[in-house]
Image 1: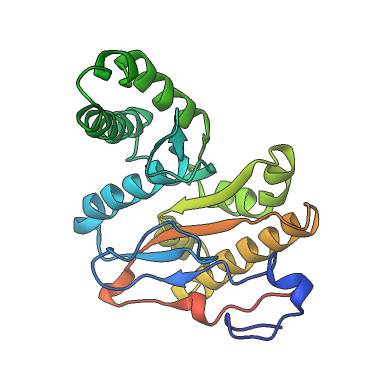
Image 2: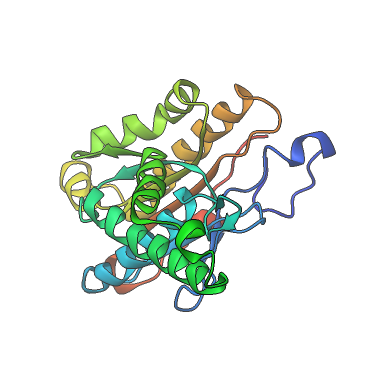
Length: 244
């Protein structure tokens, strides 16, 4: 059993069975996709702050699916295939398209001005190419819409099957993972901490199964947002255990 990322893991397993969660701190500036094997957990402060969290999540997802380069021009992306499990339905495909268009346009403009004036017309990234970059990036985004607590639990439990069907998926994002808690509470009386622990344990178990069924060099990162219920912070992911 392992309780945190400091647990000793055999060298041959370190690459695949790392702790997939890390708490985000501050205002979100640390929420960057880089070479680190960890991705953050975002605590949704409140319903009133959901717009800010969704805006931040939109930026992270766009950076994840955006290409790393085009015609040897570097782009601020990771070219990852993302499985987005959406429970609150506030982020639309159009939002991703607009965000990507802005990023791509900015890179294209900077590239244009960096070129010698004589070759700008031929070597610039034109609007057709910009849309091609956006479209290819959107192709790497797979969205699963979840509307009931039962569907959420089933989706988390079958995550390994979804990842087996699409072996390119390497980033799983769950938006508002505890959004159905009030509904579940009225039916079962379960504590919020118990409910969250169940969801995260299911997610971790399914992720571990997916990695066992994949090639040894595959990475599968996870990120989720959660509502801060009862006006207090919940950091259950630091107490959830998982098997190696």
